[in-house]
Length: 433
Length: 129
Image (tube, rainbow over all chains, first blue to last red; front, side, top):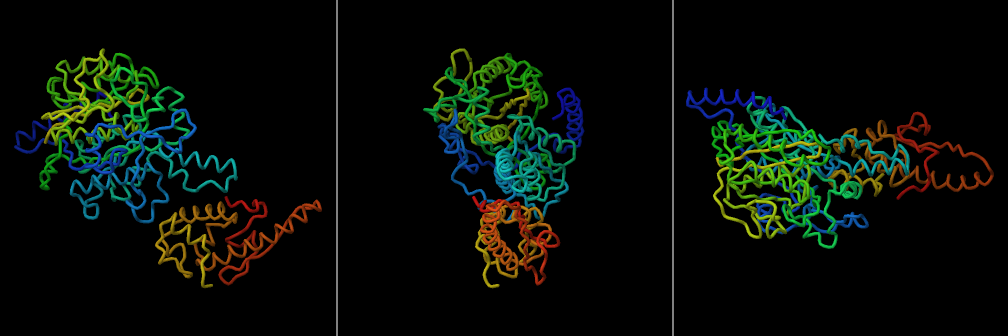
């Protein structure tokens, strides 16, 4: 992600390109199209089931046998799918779970875009796949083996399995994508960062197609307990399904989840030239850093606001142009308070707000990408999924939260927020194609 | 050799997704599309489940499944014999330094030197978990 200042300069360049192309009567080279979507989430393993699950507005959190005895023993897991069978072939043995989720989502997205990795020019295809942690369960398993049985018990594939960029690498192998590949790690903003980086790769001309998104799978006793020990997780062990409640007055933490989402991005002109109607346009992206605290957001959201404003500027929008906000909305006391303040301040016209983490939990690095998919689907369907477990937002939040039922609303423009440990802030501005 | 060690078949099909039809005595790791990392992981699993060391760099890469089966059977038999001996030796206060041979690809190798496959004397006996 380029810093905001640099992005401002890039924006100037893009506008210059746009003007030049407009004069020539061509497509805007700076406009990036979303042409394919892929999702593997706790609410559904493909676009249709994910959207249905999201619109149902019910949390899919449940107790996990592998977390039995831990202080927090519930999560949102991807279930009911044989990942190995879906992937097929002989390479799954070397893939950690987050890699499998990413690969399935990437294949879905490429197929949805009507692209064929067998025939495309792989040198012009990039992969940007945000991962926050990586294959920690592989690391833990091997640490235990080393301790119990010595060096000979350590897997020779431990390193290639656990590194966060393993997902980008395996997706590139599967898709024969030989352009730039990256694995941005901005914690819970990683998926959104990946999409923003993909946009840069396209507008700078480095790639013609970028498969971008995020993946995460760390539902292990160690990691879940670590999040619990730091006070990030909801402790509603007696009511897992009611635990994730973004913007509710009685929220007490997030519910950890796993999943992956990938988008195929192309320059709009290229997509249309090959006869593809974009599913949406990525009109702008912005990023900033709190430089405040490793885990706590700056309370007033001042620096997160900088990311949102950068995205709006990049898109050429005023805040009043934004019809809908797909919020980061984690259900933690601190994030939601900060974000509600930010939304109220940046968008005084009270655009509708939803927060998918109420249903699918917080999928960490995948979240920004999953929510980007949700935002695109809202633009397409004219439907905003409700926030789970919330009858009304906390009285101190002056937000137009969509609750209880999906809301039909013609949405031309929407912004998706993502924030991550480390102080990373990313905003993505989407509009109808 | 007409049969393949059941553990080999199980590991190749369940972990490495090798189609069962390809698992024939004449097959090699190369012919089964097992690259060097896969072969090394295979050796770790064999060690973990059967307690038998197998040097992935040499023998497993070039040997047929029939030859690997012969080695595993031989190593297990030798280990069983050594276990009994070790109990006796330990009782006598001696250090066991058993030397044995395996027949691989028509050539007899000393275990701890030229052979691609070895069973270390230090390996815990009966570590299959």
